[in-house]
Image (cartoon, rainbow, N blue to C red; front, side, top):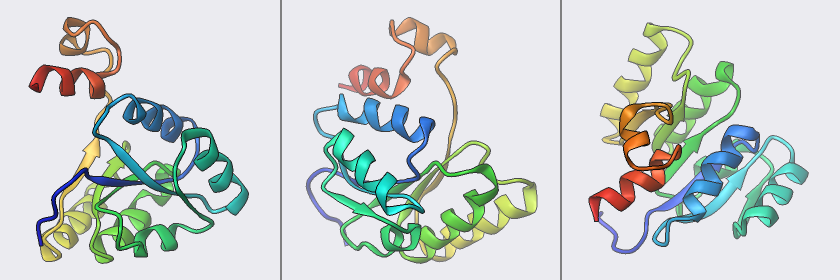
Length: 151
């Protein structure tokens, strides 16, 4: 079913990369971060308060199960990317997975097959802040730049 309105994002993990990603999203007027999850409830709550996120979960599974989330940004430890992305895809969420996408090619192929089987979007969050297109926009944060350029 196609829903109108902003894309409702969930952030899976609360570390440095998740903080940088969420800070950039908050600069975009039409970006909605609806929930965050950490393996520790206190960290999720602190992150949610810092970024004004309405829901904080003390487990990644709770975020994956949240039917109010359209896409999950997976930013946990590299070794957990495959399991976290798989859980989210199987729960019906689209996934943007931070690099390293998986630890090897067979794991990547597995996630791609799951995304196809569930008809869900899956993408690696590629680091681009030092690329020429980012410099041409006058910012090292290409998320905001790409949004400005498309309008």
